[in-house]
Image (cartoon, rainbow, N blue to C red; front, side, top):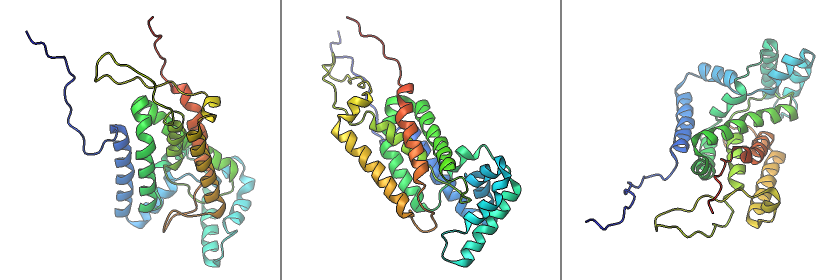
Length: 274
């Protein structure tokens, strides 16, 4: 008679301990940017125009009278006259089409301004997307990221409707995942006595907002994130060569959606048996 305990099968330890959906997300972002480097410049520019989110495109589609204001705004705040003229020419071509592209509310998250931009987003995605994917699975992870990207574009449009600058980057979706992770990663692990030594404690319930506000680690993280994001927006700090200023409003839109949407995605818990 075999008296050995029924232990779970031993699994091979992966080289990179990331959830599969997070690894796939990183691969998509890296491959798309690598392919853009191989495209002829004309094709890459066309892809940028067709897939990036441009607030002015939507503004002029709903209010054609704003076309002149968009062209004028495109040249403001630019010290180099040649650059200002080029931006105004681009804005004129943009408002002449006046065709809204609904997919750009999401597709802009697949494009990046440079490898520096990609690397920044990949690092934060690995750090904060992983705990969300482990707790909620790939589908809820995807819903949060997509909702954050769309919300980032919406808030960017509302705050800067005359902008003809293409918005690119997955940062708004990653901000949603960061906010979601902040709802539970700073909790203390619950006291748990497993029936078997290898059993893992179930994830603790989400803290309510009042409970979260009493969690010093969580509050410190939220304050630092909001202050840093606002500071980068005020000083228009770029991420690297070839990047535009950080779209702080898109980040904020994604963060707010991730923070408040997560409780709606929390799986229902089975009542404990007494």
